[in-house]
Image (cartoon, rainbow, N blue to C red; front, top):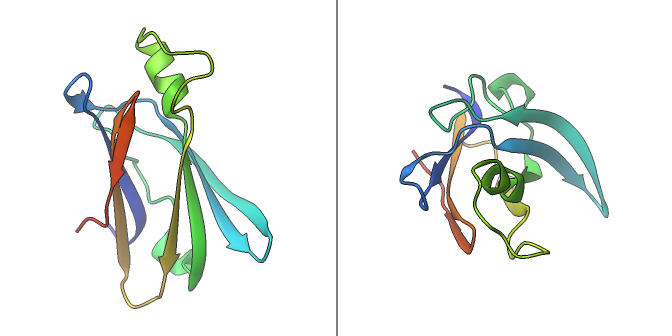
Length: 117
């Protein structure tokens, strides 16, 4: 799938993270502009790219993952405030690739992100 995609795995339960809300922003100077919102499907993925290839522009972007809400829905007891409520991942797209994939591995206490294939 061309464009900007993501995949979220729940390390606490050993399964894809279904129903995680995600916001995508384009960063411009000191501001940011909301481009798209989505929620992961039962496979922890999106049915369509967060940012289709035709809309990709060179620049900086932020993906905001609402993992606190996800773990609350799963009945996981979280501190108040939650140690990790929203995970922000800032990336740069240089336009050299038609596909950027951002996998996220989550738990209530930590996360890992990387550029996938």
